Length: 113
Image (tube, rainbow, N blue to C red; front, side):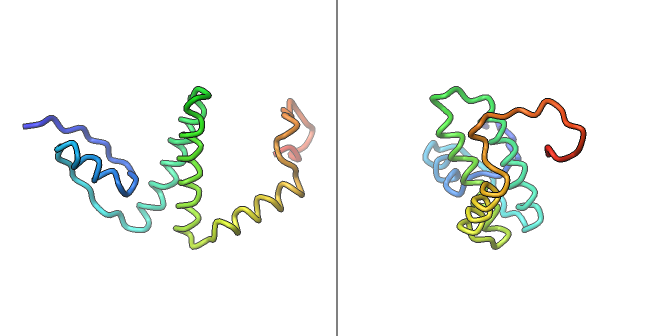
């Protein structure tokens, strides 16, 4: 009997096909909407941490994972990704982006959030 590795996490749709191709056994289940919502957010945090740790040559792969999760979360909440992009552009126009590399050391109010 093969040893089991318990992952207990959200996976991409085609991962079972890759596992089958290696003749390994596995078990999956379909989550309900509430669990899926929580797992999407957990996966976003996980992938964001991978961005943080990634060397430059792996950064594109990790950023692609983060973007896929953002799109999946938007879809789950029935938001169009183009609407998220528009909101992001509007926010950039009002509050700026991160191009100036500014780091807020201190302020006397909450305005720097």
